[in-house]
Image (tube, rainbow, N blue to C red; front, side, top):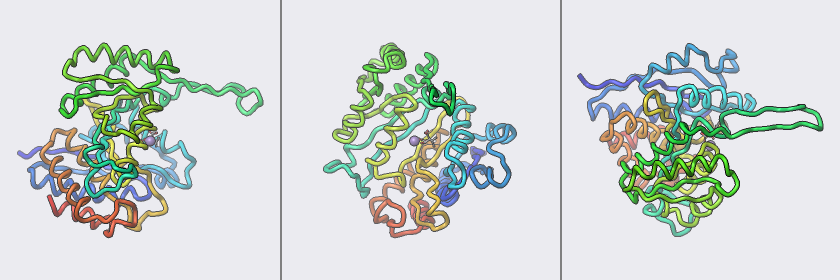
Length: 352
Ligand code: IPM
Ligand code: MN
């Protein structure tokens, strides 16, 4: 009996459905070759659904999603919905409720892709960011006092638990070992100012490090990381950091690898359901135009297969993407590819 995976698909808003369709095209092709089966259940979540029905994410939908082997997400965000509602109501809600405590973002410059960094080559840009995904400033701790008055106070606290920090750091050490490259793990923090939160992070990091004598450890403040990522990206192998810093540095990282058309991420709970997404937004103005690059969504599928344990199939997708980027696509930016969204999906599937 071939292995079977039930994939929950949330195409979402804007260009989400177009790019997810290409991700699925590629997944189906590679599944056929490697003799496993993928079935898809589509969930109509996002801005259009919210405006039409008032539903953001029901308890029943969450229960159903939890039965899947993995979730593939297109994009969430709608021009007619106030910022924050869909992000908090769907994306962050799922990350928190499903305890997807790792946000994994591979950063790799492929041949044929232009980086804004002068003189940097594919061999210089190849690292992973492991971002804590359920705590920190994202935990929603805080509130207002005397809201709307001249005496207003707004407090937003960063929550860092020993358990949350430790499991994230352990994941980073493990993946650094498994990756088997420079075997260097860098903690990104701000120990000179955030002397409580990053004291906990640093102590935990140093303690866990003792169990990984084969991994070299390193520390850099987040502002310095931004500097080095531009000047010397080749210094990084795996970076581990908290939720907010991870959010910020991975946008910078996405740009040096060629932009949002390429960048994918995984919201991972190693013991439960994980969710994979192209990290770009819903790009409303391009909706239905078939100009968006689906490679990020295809690579989200690749990361999904890797996490499900289908490494050979995941490698096949990456190899095909490498070929398409090197030999076919003119430019990774929307509208400049020389192909439609769907044609890029065909190219990747064709090489598989
Ligand atoms: C990301 C996004 C989200 C985040 C937003 C949409 C809530 O920027 O996945 O990085 O801040 O985590
Ligand atoms: Mn972000």
